[in-house]
Image (cartoon, rainbow, N blue to C red):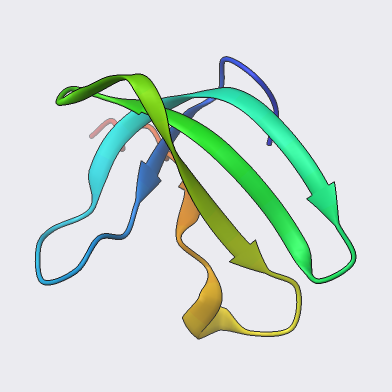
Length: 67
């Protein structure tokens, strides 16, 4: 994923929220994404751990399937 990609983020106790990636920072343990959400227009950081699906908070938004 890269800057300007449309993503969804996992937050505590609610449905996934849609946003746009503003910045990406690589670390040995994973990747930090600065994501612009509706109520956080300047962005909020989310961390995806390399070795844990439970630690994956940012995922690419999949387009709705056309029927």
